[in-house]
Length: 457
Image (cartoon, rainbow, N blue to C red; front, side):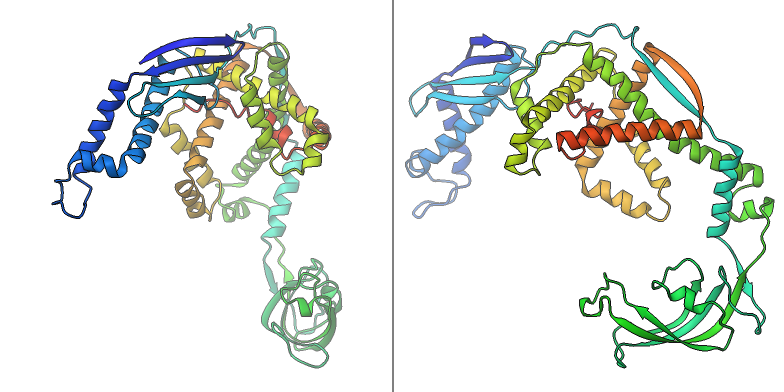
């Protein structure tokens, strides 16, 4: 095989590759011998069909198969020989081929640019730490308590009030007729939450145990049976029990019911949970602050085929007129994303950062623990979608890179309260929404900081 650089312009290199006919013939002979064991033809015993007969019958298709294999092998060897880092799939242009001839083709390759990283020492960013106020923690505990409230029976003479739980059977009719779902037994309804049918709760206020009451209700617009949507109905309800909320005390016993050791442990757990929620959002802001500086302070030549590919992914769900209208914005965004990917990948490679399979498994287990009751679903998702694990590996790799960059730059720590955190997050979200609307690409701003071109080691 002979490989020569025919031309080189910018990031595009064209190689001329010649594979001698004797090598092609050797591959042909090798394939014919393999087929001799497989082909069955009338008049010949299995495995005894002469290669010349096989060639006369299937020569063109065998030649095509052999050449296709040679192209794959020699393309890879040619790229390795010239030590090229390719961006995307090379294009092959056949110049000469055919039995008894040398195979001559050109390989058009878009190469990855040489990335020169600047020193990150002068980059600045703010790392936010949120102080969770006692009031916020107490509000959350009260919310949990209300979600897990216990009820006790009222006296038979006592009427139902807002916040009580009414247990009843019902039989409903539409124009005097029964319909699907018109019967219900032992329905538990907490008055005031309006979770059954709109206005239903209000009509149950004042009922007592043993009462029978007819209620008017409108079936919901999204009723599974379209013919029943928005229909006026009558519900005959038999009240079986009235229960009132139990007085509860937020103390160690309550904490134990919630799975904590004591009230101090419960408060600590809630504080950590709320803090993590804020940290997740604020870390995204810090990350964008860093990525914006990296992108702004580096110049990188970008392969056009990667830009085209990124734009295609970003705009795949857009109409033709939208693609044209926002062409400039989308191209700019695609270039930023590819540029960041190349820069971060270079930084990761220079610092020998890697993500092991064990780290991916540990992250999946972390996700499983964070979704109690849905463990099987999460596990099956990763088992059925191998690409999901690979994407997760890429995200972990990127996070390692960002954490290393944070350790090198001028990172200022700032403690803020929840009100300040809410303001920062809201302003950031508003900015993202405006950019997304301008670019008209689904999730483009969110993904800007995810650098899709990072190699997943």
